[in-house]
Length: 147
Image 1 (spheres, rainbow, N blue to C red):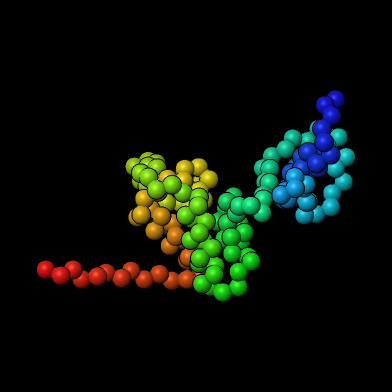
Image 2 (cartoon, helix red, strand yellow):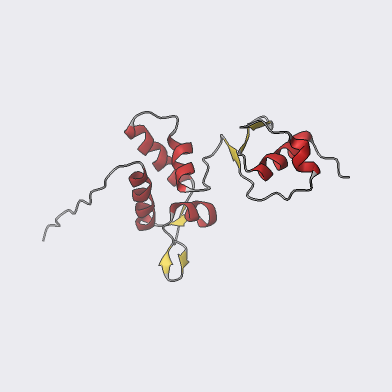
């Protein structure tokens, strides 16, 4: 038998039960629901879909989780938009965007988790989809150029 710290066993048990686990900055683990770990670990259950999130960065497992974890501490729409803009800036690099099947990857979650490579046009589309997820509408303003 391999001896592992109790926190590792708790994470494995919680993950097997499909309950989210949060790690704090001190290295401790806070489990969102109580669970008797002995029955899950002792049964030899496999661990699938492990989801460990931190308060140091947003949860990018899906769009709803990303929006919630990024904007939950803010009350005004302006603050929420700023938080989304901040994290879309942090989670990407300004370079040639990833092209998959002939198209730029503009899915926010796939881009943030897998690639993180965008140009102005790509991140504009990503930001637009994030703001629309907040329930905001966008407007395109075209400026007439002088002859």
